[in-house]
Length: 582
Image (tube, rainbow, N blue to C red; front, top):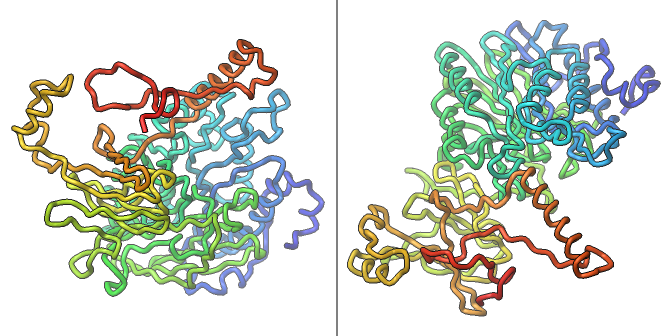
C-alpha cells in the first residue's frame, strides 16, 4: 500500500487521525458501478468493529486512506456522503494507555471514545455511531452504565443513543445503540436496545412509509433475529448474544416484526462477529426465487454483515469494510478490501420494484473456505405451501412421540415441541431455535454430554386420576389440581439415554417455558465471583499452610435445581460438592 509522502512522515497516530486529504477524483473507485450520478445519489461508508488499540494504529490510517478518494469524488459530484460506525470502538484489553493502572481495559473509557471520535471525524464527512457491547466497558472509570453512556454521547456529540440522518431525498439512515453492560441480566456481550429506542424506531418507520417513497437503512451493532445471516461465531450462538436483545424473547422478535410490517426498511447493516464479507451468507435478500426455497418473510429488507478494519481483530483473516452506493432506483452493497489496496468489489445489486418490493442479485460466488474460525450455522427450514420441511425435520409417530435416534457430531435433526418451541441439533449440541424465524437462540445440552447418546421426545402428561395418585405421594404436591396443571397443551419430555450406563436424563425446560440455558451472567457478576474464588484460594492456602495458593482445591456452587421435590433439604451439587448419584 503506497501512502503519500506527507502521511509517511507522520507518526502512526497522526496518520490515522489526520484530516481527510483532498484527493483527485478516481474513475477506478466507480468502475464497476452500474449506477449513474445524480442529485438523488448517495454514498455511505460502513465501518465494522474498530476495537481501537492506541498502540496499533497503522491499519486505521490505511483503511481511512481507502475511503478518501471515494468520498472526495462523491462530494465533488454533489452526492450525499456519510460514514457510519457499527460500534465496539475500543479494544477490550489493557493497552498500556493508563500509567496509573496496568489492568484497566481500554474499551469504554473516556480516552477510548475521544480517540474514536477523533478518528471518525477525520474522514471529512458527517459520521454517526451506534454503541456495541463493549462501548460501556469503562468499568474502572465509571460506576454505572448511565455515567458511561453520558460520556460516550458527549465524546461523539450525540444527544441520544439512536440517530437519524437524511443522506439523500427521502433516504434515511437510522441507528440504535446498546445501552446496557453492568446491568445486563445475562451476558454483558448481549447487544441491548432499550425500550425507548425501540419505541422511537417504531415511530420512525410508521411516519416514513414506503407508500410515500421513504427508504430507511438501519444500523445496529448486532443483527436482529430473523435476518437470516449464517456467518456467525459459535460462541455467540451458544452463549445467547447473537441477536439484538437476544435474551428478551418479546423484544428479540420485535425487530423482524417491524421489518415485515414496514417495507420502507430497505437494508440493515451489522457487525459483531468479526468475520469477513466474502461469503454469500453475509448478505441475505428479502425475496428469493420460489424454485430455490420457501419465502424468507423478511419484508423488503436486505441484511448485511460487516467485517473489521484492523488485522488483530479479525477472526478469519479478512480486513474489510462496507460501502453503499445508491439512488432512486436501488443501491449496491460493496466491499472495500483493506488487504488489496482498498479494492472496491461489488457484492450485491438491489433494484427497487415500486415502493414496497426489491430484488437482489449476488455479484460473485460464495468465497468461503474451510477453517475452524468459520462457523456457518445450520438453520432449520420449515418449508411452506410449495416446499416440504428440510430433511432434518423429525416427525412424531402414531403414539405422539419422536422415536429415539443416535446423536453424533454431524447429526442434523430438528422438531417442534407441542408448546411451539423448536429444538434441533447443531455440531453435536442441542440448540433451541426461535419458533418463528428458526434462528438459533442458545445451548440446551452441550456436545460433551450429548454426543454418543440417544435422544427422543415422549408424552409425559397424565390423566387426572393417575396424576392424583402419583402426586399424593409426592411431598409438597398433595392435593394438586392435576387437570389444571395439564392445561390444553400436551405435556412432553425430552429424554437422553446414555448407551454405556443406561442412565436416562430428562431435559427440563426453564420456568418461562424456554429450553436454552442462560448460563452466562454479566461481567460484573463474574468478576465478583472470580474475586471470591481468589480470596478462597488465599484463605485455604493460609489455613492448610500450602506453599502455593494455586494448589488449593476450590470449586463454586450456584445453587442450581437438583431435585423435583417440593421441599429443599440439600444444597450439594452431585459430582461437584457432593458424591455423584450415578
